[in-house]
Length: 61
Image (cartoon, rainbow, N blue to C red; front, top):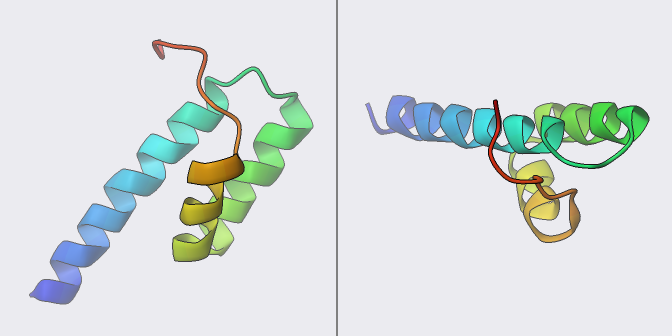
């Protein structure tokens, strides 16, 4: 049960990170690389993205 809850929380955070990456001012290639990094290295990728990744320009949508 706890594993499922932690997995759901991770999924929500990963989706939020990817939406922020897409909404950032980074170039298309950098957006793809950051997205792949977050997806392939789940915990480490999210932590590194949070501290040094591209930031969103504001509202998404």
